[in-house]
Length: 256
Length: 336
Image 1 (cartoon, each protein chain N blue to C red):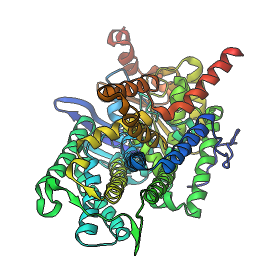
Image 2 (cartoon, each protein chain N blue to C red):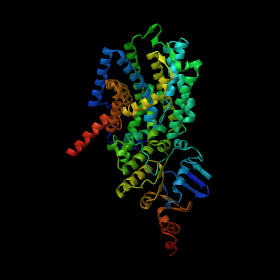
Image 3 (cartoon, chains in turn yellow, cyan):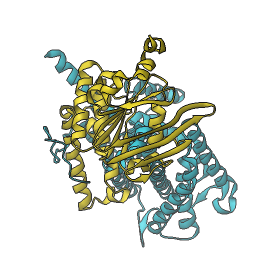
Image 4 (cartoon, one colour):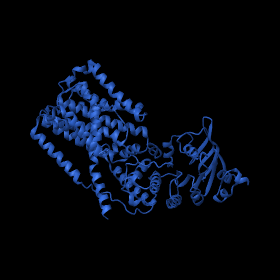
């Protein structure tokens, strides 16, 4: 079944066409990747899907409902949660607290509940702590639970961001260049985590620059170049696609 | 929440993990108690100074919600102290209300005004928010000077009764100080509860990264407003308590000096911590008294000590236990 459908989505900033009539469908329980050279419009597409801004044209359907132009917060509430290319952790909070914040959408209670602490609130807090620890164990950060988030090495900060996003119990997880700035070992750890997330029933849509990661974990890949979709297919198909080779290596190479 | 488990929690942190009191915290508490004992025996002017410190402690505990946990700037929280103070003066001295009734009424009025004023203002960020809130304080000041029919202008409002219930009034300074400290501790207790909750986490998330908080579904505008209102209610209570404690208020009481003083207290004590605002309030209140004997050098000595504290404890004195733990860890690491 299709979880996310992007139909003829365009985004223009004045005269600049960042995304031009892009369409694709992300099936449930897959790892789906969007790749492309720098400036191809990947992050714009991601921002449009996640509701950071509205598309100029086109429709985005998620889990059977039209989410075009909805606020990011409301899209997140429907189960589409994103991470950022530059890690956006809550630096003054501990690793565990960062993940606990992630449960915001799937928990309730504000000032009144915080003050009176009824039984359900205490039970909820206990569950949030437990499940946050489970998520940290899931991404391999259990030992760092009590550390301040900004003391982690960069690779672990990425994993923490993923764990925090998972806390919101998304149906679709959007990862914006998760391997950026990671070394080979860290990228490998990340790849394993992403595959295990999919195995848990969460669909993953990632934008990536790192071809080795994408070819290893994605079932299906869309390639953007100059704002247009130039190819879509399995990793094997994409590797041999002439337009993709042209986009990555230059036109002469493709025609040579 | 549905019941997906993410695998075994390898090192589950137990919930009942008790807070272990560090040496610094214990000595801090002891110094505090000793100070109170001296004040109670000694009485007089020093008791008034500590009373002010308690009132400022309440004010700063509230301000800490907005500036510390949520990471937003407000240069105009004195407006809500003025609302509380003048509300109390007008209702109790003017209308003859019971203090115990007037206090919650002024709190509700301040909260309502904070919602109305905060809703448009909190769309601003950074310097713009600082300027808008600064204007708020100035407007309230001008109103308290010019609206003579309501506030009695520069003359100020006198004859405000001390706190009390029914016929029983807290007539002595010592009784009043006890109540001020109880209210302060109650305020700290509430702050602690609010901080350690889904609500408090959302506020601290906003301070950390608005982009990430938004992506996790936190309604940023709403939580900022909530923090602003909490801060306003604390400020209002502080203003009311000041009016009851001294029995007289004038526009100057809630003027610009309140802003600079409360900022000094917050940063000196440790912004974003539970006890920081109180530590700051006590030290900033006592220092000028301690240097009184230096006469004309008093201000210089006061400023020098403030600067020294901020150089050696840039995160405030409340960060001291954390710093010591950090040093010890580094020492242990170096030794191993």
